[in-house]
Image (cartoon, rainbow, N blue to C red; front, side):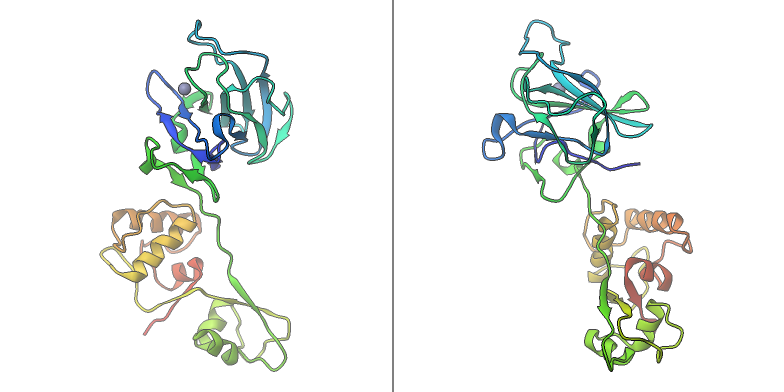
Length: 281
Ligand SMILES: [Zn+2]
């Protein structure tokens, strides 16, 4: 499943998804683009329909006004409604990327005020956009947003820190720099002979050293670090330092997807996957 991005950079949900409103409405703020804040593509895709030229219409309750519909893949399509007349910058058939400008917020069609009526279709059926859409970096969520606690955050994966081997370096010298035993560093980098490293070689430096197994019932700062790391990988855990059932489920899911040993426990193998070292003492 792809992670859609909110189509506005200032996120305030003013009307939530329900039986008689199968979309979410997104509002505006005078400090962040105002009445006509920019509307962006929620993901890569192809524009499959565009309607323009409509004004506000409080007579026909089903008039969507100006809109753009984008097909993202075989499953997911989004529709952006009530766009400002003549602000649409794409055409039918346009290829778009995540975050490309599409139009400006407006009140065309049946709209009591400026807002974006945002539909997500999964296999042609309207679904709750909040379950498929993520707030990306640099997007602001209003404190006053409805369903604020249900908004997902998208965490881009952090890459490993990489050290480049210089003249006269040894693995133990590099290990000393980062407080990591050279055997652990060798193991982490799949180096079979720690004496054989060459200038220019890239050595991945793990971010964290774990000194005991983490499993259901574990508590403390290590669990907090684990939850933060899992959130970077796209999970949505509360960072409370308590390894409960949700944390375990996330670990099981991660282990399944990555063909690790599926035991719900963070030991040597799963630590390595997370970019950590597990020091078995
Ligand atoms: Zn609406």
